[in-house]
Image (cartoon, rainbow, N blue to C red; front, side):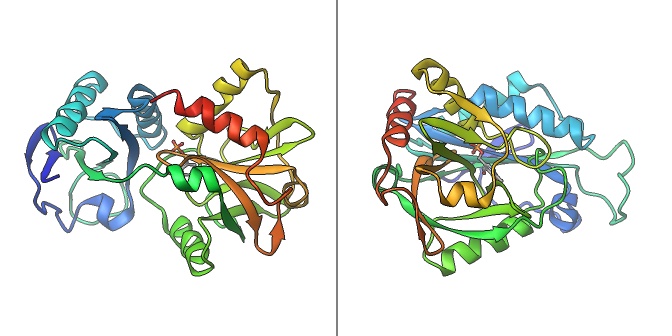
Length: 276
Ligand SMILES: Cc1ncc(COP(=O)(O)O)c(C=O)c1O
């Protein structure tokens, strides 16, 4: 795992961070995390499409083309001999003297990527996990995958301190998503998930689950729902890269449904596993 991508070069991994990199100082950059299964990045085109969108939304011009970036990431996976794990990649607005406004146009964005070996999460996906609830204190452009993750970090820490896998976020009464995953609920045989607007990140796993549900004939409602709806749902599950589909059996002290992974959640998980 000791090769990294630095701009357009695959090289030995080393610490090349400039202390005036805007990603480091302002969180001024965007990122993606891509799952790797059996040596192949899953849904790489979709992740790169989202990266391009995030770049556009923060007015950052990506250096080079997406086609080149795709082949570099594939080369990185091969160079590291990665079979199971993730690719982390980010593009910051570059390094320049620290002033809030964008730097002069001759400053180039900095792209870095590395891989990390990770086991599959099959056990937790089969058995389910617990979550906690916490207020969503993030900004109003959660649809952009930016490096600014402090509210997500604080929420996830709360989950971990409560032996939970995730912190499910709500703005007032409405559930948005979780600190690093999207949330679905099942009620009376139908699926509900927050619409893909500025309040959530439109997860690549979420989008794939919606497509799979279409094929399975499961009715999905991209509609907001309340914390009460979620606590009274028959099933709750979360989706994210590498976690795929994880049943949520308990939220704070409240058991969801029967307290076991539900039928629809298992059906969606099974369908998702056919992708790799
Ligand atoms: C806030 C947030 N929502 C949802 C997701 C799930 O997105 P994806 O399925 O693309 O991993 C993530 C992933 O990290 C996330 O950080």
